[in-house]
Image 1: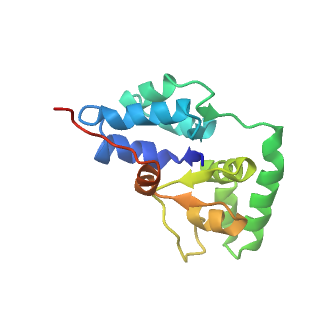
Image 2: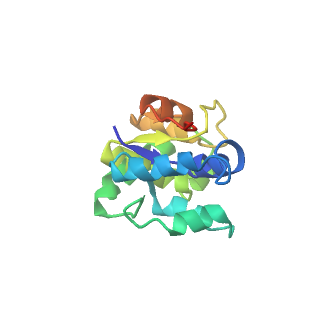
Image 3: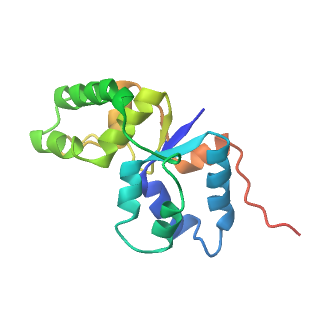
Length: 162
């Protein structure tokens, strides 16, 4: 199983759960999981991480396009499928327009194209005013998990050695 990480996974990790200063093991695990071919993200997420010049943007800039996957021609059919779902799912026109210009659209479509699992802190919503990642995933048959579920499935361990 391979995963595509949403922007909020990185931001919440840095700000809340796995700060670089007190839990470097999380970031080391991400790096190793990438080397093992199971953790990736997309270039548009990297762009969002670079909005603020901080240690997270520094970390993102140290990772190549192999980690932050770029769009390619293979993505086009999945973009079309995701777009068709968004346009036909009963969301308000503004919600659809916003989604189709957002990183989330590309993240879900890339996961669809590759058969990857999306990892996000977002949750399913019944609102028709904003398309959330889990709703789009469910709409086009892409699996999604929270970061904590991913870490448990992959048996990540952040242990202080004695």
